[in-house]
Length: 229
Image (cartoon, rainbow, N blue to C red; front, side):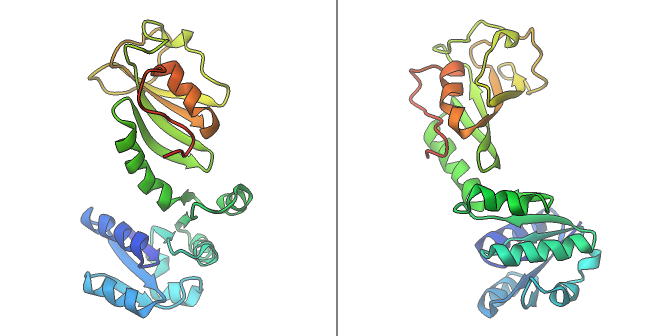
């Protein structure tokens, strides 16, 4: 596949490297000459210029691209690039930084295919290391939603109960279930929750701690407060 990435900074360049390692064709668009030079030194094709301008993106042969990623630190540039990409039939990925308000997120997210939060994606790895083995953050779905994987412990209030008997808070849903040492799959209602079993849950940040208490138990040294780590 072929990708046009706007922004050769930390996020854009790392993304380009991963895509290249997987065998994809990547071209970077960068306004800053120093960043452009660094990307070229790394072996990438780079178009220097304003990534929000269609004429610049056309130099990157946007018509042949499968997807466009607006990955600069400037939301307006990212959004403009995505709109140009959408006009040219590309899948569009928009970077939004952590400090934008929910209303800003909603304003932009409805017009692109996917929104990414690089700060949160990086924080997930740190959070998992701090939480330990019983709770693992998988992905941020939106500003207020996260998918977490929880492992049933000896202290779990639901150990021995079936999935049909599991009552989670209103703003949470079971997405998948896996017996110990088995692959995760559809959460069938008659499956019992035993020591070492894993449950993937989609939940609002506000109820993650309640979900943890129900599935892991209060004695766990890990916590799953919304964005708390």
